[in-house]
Length: 71
Length: 469
Image 1 (spheres, rainbow over the protein chains, first blue to last red):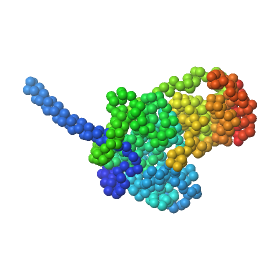
Image 2 (image 1 turned 180 degrees about the vertical axis):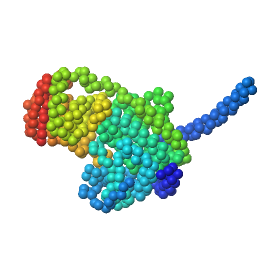
Image 3 (image 1 turned 120 degrees about the horizontal axis):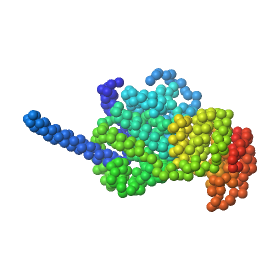
Image 4 (image 1 turned 60 degrees about the vertical axis):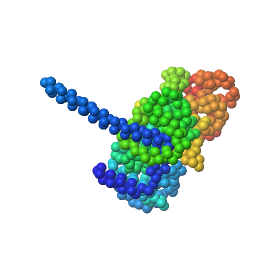
């Protein structure tokens, strides 16, 4: 079964599943809170990294132009 | 999945397993020695979706998960499908596993979870009781806990993983405290709150100790006062798959590097050096064990006081099919596990204190089977062992002999006299308060319960007794 049909199947199952999100397991509030905090940090890090990458690529372009002019 | 005949009733009655009651969608049933699993329509749909990814097939091929196929029995009322699983011969509990095996079980769980995520599958729970052992090879048994992964969901079983796998390992690795007694009493694992209370302040400098021990415990305490806000925060949380995978990876690297602290310094790890035998006496004992195994050829053998498994290996190399070893010394058990791995033995070393064996416990006192309720072996071996019970633990010699002989219809038991150097050390402070302890008394107790096939005298007054019921 390829990825696409798996995603359809998973989507259909989400629709069908009436059970609560975590079924019979007791997740533990502390663990869940730590993960939600990590999730926020992770998103911030990713956003931060893409911004930093833009800054880096801006400067490396400038340097290359200068090198070309010197030749 | 191959089609099979349906609605043929099993010869043995099909009964629900007493440990299978938490998941309303899937129930484990037993029919004699066979293991069956009934699934509701929803659970069956999840199972089929997961199977379709090829994930379970890959795990089955590598023997990391028990095989499953359609069962000939019709599902019981309320269920839509019946599967049959490959049965694991001997069920053992996490609190009986030596450190090395609990570590393997933890790594297996994480490996399976990481691979599952790659295929958009996740695991509903992280119970250590979902792993069993074939010799020292861990195998995952809860097929029903696989379900499709929902993007953004948190790892709901993280708490359970930490309490049932990580924390017991940390007790040994960080504090040098074997996990067995605590874990056996606190069936569902070592509470993170308890471990956090013991944890040194240096943990606040370590990201992984913060994430898995200190912060969850702290957050739990803080959340207790503001439950509704916490629940809201959790409901809104969205953990990217990369973050989820990072958590699993971080735990895997941490656990892979954990080693028990202080075990190698136990009395038994130095046993080889401090041993009372010379090389010739050792050879004589090995020869008798080899003959016993070759003559009896037990399919399963229990080795009580197996120590580092030296004689278990002799038995397995000479005709015993498989062996479970029991010992109360964590250091010796680590050595036994290493031996089983190195020599590829059908040997499962387990922690057990014969004077306080695993009881039946859990819900209704039946969820986790006692040692006495496991399938009995074909033969038993108790070498350099009975004196630890009779003299070390002050147990009546009669009862010790009766206990050993009741384990299997055939066996090899070693009697250790008071003149032995180890016994002398044992009695040094206690004094000789055992007038009734003698080889004659031992032999009489044995003869009253079984047929003595032969005896072999060893050096230092030790003697091997070979009995049959």
